[in-house]
Amino acid sequence: MKAELINEFYLLQQSMAPYDYREKMEEQVYEPLKKANHKMTSWIYRRGKMLMILDRKMNSSMKHLRRKYLKF
Image (cartoon, rainbow, N blue to C red; front, side, top):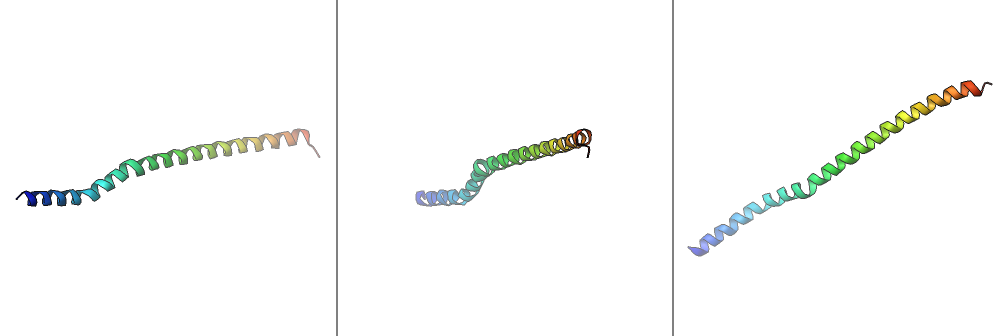
């Protein structure tokens, strides 16, 4: 009886092991990676948007200065 209970307990542990492993991988590895990836992509997006606005402003200013000072 004791050996059967131990064997059943061992089988129960083995059946739960893959689920627990996947859950831990999701919790400890994939979630932090997803968060870091989201932070990086949003940071790159904001930086790119800011640079495009700066470029647009600079081109507008250069156009104005060319008209004002470089009359050919």
